[in-house]
Each structure stands twice: as structure tokens, then as C-alpha cells.
Amino acid sequence: MYEFKYHRPATVRQAANLLIKNEDAKLIAGGHTLVPVMKQRLAAPPHIIDLSHVEGLDGIEIKGRSLVIGATATHATVANSPVVGEALPALAELAALIGDPAVRHKGTIGGSLANNDPTADYPAAVLALGATIVTNKRKLKPEEFFQGLFTTALEADEIITKVLFPVAKKAAYVKFRNQASRYALVGVFVAKRPSDVRVTVTGAGSEGVFRVTAFEEALKKRFSPKALEGLTVPADGLNSDLHGSAEYRAHLIGVLARRAVEAANNRA
Amino acid sequence: MAKISMIVNGNQVSGNVDPRTLLVQFLRENLRLTGTHVGCDTSQCGACVVHLDGKAVKSCTTLAVMADGHAVTTIEGLAADGAPLHPMQEAFREHHGLQCGFCTPGMIMTAVDLVHRKGHDLSDHLIREELEGNLCRCTGYQNIVQSIAAGAKAMANSDLA
Image (tube, rainbow over all chains, first blue to last red; front, side):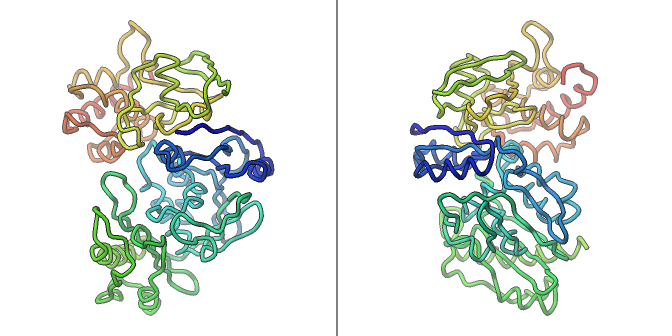
């Protein structure tokens, strides 16, 4: 790992000022993506700004019809939160599938979203549920926030503070994990919302998370695994690597989407 | 350099470290607590698991400066020198839960964290799922799972948490 200067702000405002003052600074919360890439020397930020001492960034609460999760809430906190389990059990289950127990004790929802790894789990939930990503400057819809591989709309001095998830009628996430890394080879999130159905896919798209509108339209007519029978996703543009070909991933999307619909129906 | 201080195995310790020092380096190289191992160095194998404020974390993926002001427990802190082993350590000995022993400190720290979270009556299935972040290249896991199940029960009747 290359040298860096370490900063420990106490407030979001201080953190934002440090971001403005120090070019190419990076925020750290749990560090479970940033530290590994720094060790590999794929990232060499000259300044690290530690958010773990900023108070009030990790809360979880229900506000109106939304579940509000603070940016530094860890995966373990989300997975075990009775509030999340009651309001959006699919999200608690998703968090419980990230990494392993020790990783979940450190990794955070804000870190996962800001990194926008194409195989991360949270982006699928955020896009499917139509969540709002709140920063120190503005509110972003997932369509604006996710901008392709490891790319987001976040500006240099912008910090995610919380995520607002509208509570869906029915939702489920099914993940086919890479056995070694435990990242999603393919993950499908299905959400039946008051006005529509959304089906999102992570792990498979070469540009990150995406929606499968053909599946969504079929499920809007009838929210049942049967509605997806015979429907497929083209392999064009999907990831192909030593873990699975694009065709294999395309096949998995159909299988996992049917399982997710079944899981969502069984919960209700 | 950054001045850090933390409680390690109940003792107040401090050090002056380069901010890029990993927690596992601080433990092994500054404090000479070499029971915590570096296996894969990529957050996957779990040989480096320690408890940070009572929760299992991978010390190869944690900066030492981020543990400043916190409490760390390593394998050395489970039982005092010369005192009887911690029940989870004793269970690994009794059930032959190790061969080469390299993964064992991380296995035991993960197992103790598991008991803290899920209680003393653990099914084999649950133990296997919870061990997803700890790799063993020797045992085939069978005896590790048996050790953890027995250690979890034994911890119910022990003063050592």
C-alpha cells in the first residue's frame, strides 16, 4: 500500500471540507473495498478521510412510508435490524448474503453504493426499490446515481449520508454466489411496488446493475414465476469470465428471477 | 506517523505508526502478538480474525489507525498465560479441530464470535454457513465443526466468555 495522510473528521461538513482541500482524497468507512484495492496498489489516494467517527451516520428508522438507513450502517447491522426485518425483509436477507460474518461487521451500505462494484448486492436493491440516495448536497434517484462500472454521480466533495427505501408490497433477492469471493455471479432483486414491478440484475451487466423490462411487464400482469416462463435475457453485453460465460449468466438471470418471485410470494 | 492507543487483550497499548499500517501488522510486529496470522491477505481466508469491540473482523483489512481508541481481543487474550485454555481452544484440542494449525486462531476467534451472536446450541449446518469466511486447507472441516459445536456448549458453563 502506498503512503497516505490520514484524517479523522467529526462531522459530515468537516469531511466535505477535507475532500475539497485535498485533491484525490478518498473516504473510508468500513474499508472493506478500499483497503483491499489499496493493498493491491490499484488505488493510491494521497489522503484518507475516516468517516467512522462521524456521529449519527449509521441509524436505521422508519420515516413515513420509507425505511431510512444511514450510510455507515454495516451489513451486519442491516441484516440483524428488527426494523429492516419488519419493513423490508428482502433487504435484511440481501445484507446477510454479503461477504462473510467478519466482512459484514465492517462493510457499510454507503461504501458499497459509492463504489458501485458491478458485482455488489446493494445496487440491485436500490434500483429495484427506487430508493433515494441522500448526500450532503442533494437527493439522487438510482437512475442518475449509477453511471456504469465503478462510476456514480457523486461529485468530488459529495458524501452519501443515508438511503431512503420506499417499502415495497413484496420483494425478494436471490443471489448465485461466486464460491470463493462470495460476490454475486448473478443476483436478481424483484420488487412489487404500488404502481409497478421492477426486476434488477447485478453481477451480470458489464456496465453494472440494470433492469429487465421484459420481465417487469410480464410480472406486472401476473406476479408469478409462471409469468416468466419462456422469457429470456439476451447474452449480449453480459459479463463473461472464468467464473461463467455471458450465456450462463443470461440463463441464471431467468432462473433467479423466477426464484425471487416465488420467494416474494411465499413471504406474504 | 500517527499516534494510536487501544486496549489489546485488556492491556492499554500505544504506538506511533505509519497510517498505512494494518491492524494485523500492528498486532504482530509492534506488539509481537503473532498468534494472529496473515493467510491470504485478501479478506477471504480468515486466519487474521480478531475481535474489535467484541465483533469478529479481518485484521488484514482494517487499518490500525481505525482501531485507535477501541478494544481488540486476539487469540492470546482468550485465556491467561498458564491458566486453563478457553473452552473453545480446549474443544479444538479435544476434537482434533486442527492439523497444521495455521487457520486455527482465526477459526477460534470466529467461533467465539459466533457463540456470542447465536448462542450455545449450534447446528452443524449453521456452523458451516458461519465459517464461510474461514478457510482450512487440511482438515476438511469435519473436526472443526465438531469442535465448535462442543466449544459452544462448553462456553455456557465457563467464566471465560
